[in-house]
Length: 170
Image 1: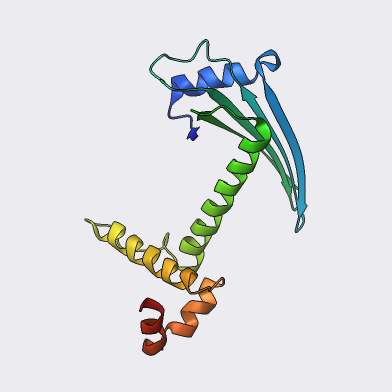
Image 2 (image 1 turned 120 degrees about the vertical axis):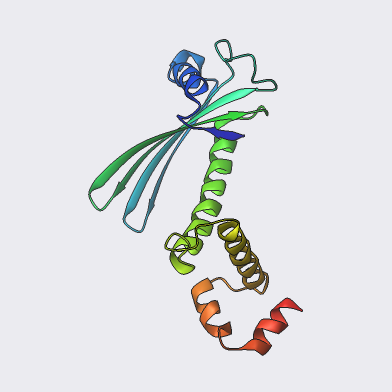
């Protein structure tokens, strides 16, 4: 399963037309989540109809739409995401898979952006940005493989403790 964004203009518009036609939906799942002052309504719809999809998308089996309405601190956001899948499944399973993927993405991006300040980095030329990002990923993996959940706290603990750092690697 992969996400389809607006930069894939033709495929995006083809999917949009199909999944917005209720007669072409084969499975749907709706769930509401309330957590920490945030309310989120997610509607996942799946279509088996591929009649107007470009034939270049070989192996395509289903089209998925996730419509999210999120209310946080009095502000409401309305978001729609589209996906294509080479598997045949139902809206509930796609919803769970997409949520798990988003949770992983969000936790990784949060740690890299906030804790490791990756977005504020002044390193911008050559291979240096990718190299630094790889080093940060390795560091995160070492800390997580040593059962540290709070990365900021773990970094403070190991920052000046070479013996502890060494014991995590060996």
